[in-house]
Image (tube, rainbow, N blue to C red; front, top):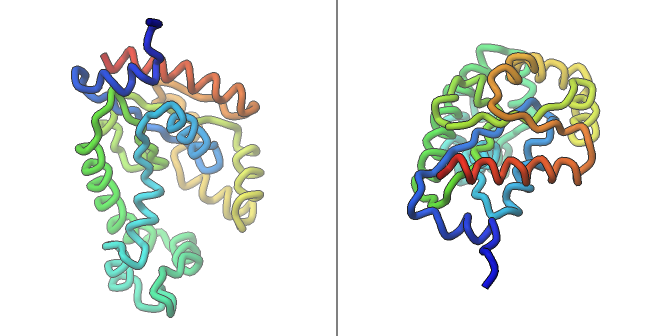
Length: 215
């Protein structure tokens, strides 16, 4: 018989190893979702803070009522969904409102991250948390993985993806920790300025590293 594949080892050895937690972060437009999906293809569990946030503000989410109470019923559409555009514009122009929203969302997001972690059985997991450094939650993870690209690349990617102006995108970037600070706190960095093949190669190398560190 041949040697088991890395994927098979990943699935089989969880019961003798403490789970290693990798915090995946980066600025808007840096490609965090693309990298997360590459880890998923290697059977690595990914807990995504953005997915959790979307669930929390869905019609069945526990944050929706809190937002309605804090901001007013005008932030809820007639069909019961959150008026994302109005909320985005409000917090973009009002730092106090932004802080109020964060006070609602961040505790709920991290509580759900920890709940999902408690249900995992794997050598390591990816915690995709865009605001990991901004919320000062570095202690939650064992390793900080930063997805990096220049600011002009961020702006171009977000402009092509979202209906936001360069001014709005720049303001979002400036509201996050600086690129220099993010890189200074990184344990590993993925350069996401090249093609998908080279990006995948970086992920595969890190996958091997994280499996070793999880032992």
